[in-house]
Image 1 (cartoon, rainbow, N blue to C red):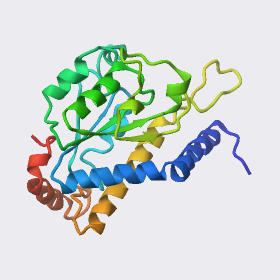
Image 2 (image 1 turned 60 degrees about the horizontal axis):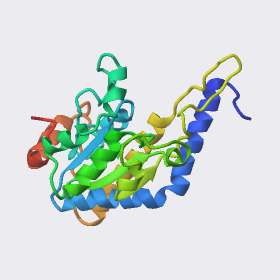
Image 3 (image 1 turned 90 degrees about the horizontal axis):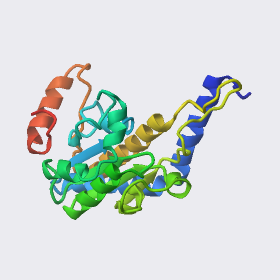
Image 4 (image 1 turned 180 degrees about the horizontal axis):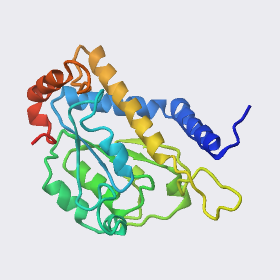
Length: 251
């Protein structure tokens, strides 16, 4: 029996989106996981970036139990998160030309590394410029976006393109334009965004693929354990010591 409460409808919508990832994105997920495994095995470093609420999925990959220790957060001041004041400044900075290129030039990113760029719409200057600038440096780019925006909205950057046009692998979250799953009588605006839960699940599927791919090659994946289980801190210290030249969040 279907649950017609708003909570039930939202959870059903999220489950449907996750099911689409399982059924339709298996190929890109495998490709992205393999690319990450290749980068780890070849001595490269891993970075993730997202602006605004897209940063939540990027942060979910960094320094967490069960995750690859080598994933670093690429931070752009005022853009990663909603702690900037006023919050609208973060959205404005996504449209500033030259900012992404400047950040990359002063970042540790170098040829042979890999960058995950998360942008729901993929239409603003920041994700497009970051992808093109990173690839020009010889960095592999995995883009996480909703491809629907490319057909239902217009680009908001000088190139007239979207993030999906500048990636080695594109992961389509399948989130509808507007990122709101529900409508309700008496509520003027659609509500209940699902992009965070879906994008995080999509990326964890990629990371699971990467870890298993490394293990299948006979390479121990540099995974972190929870600090809240016995021996977790010691394990993590050993991993971060062994890979200290590829980890930037502990300095």
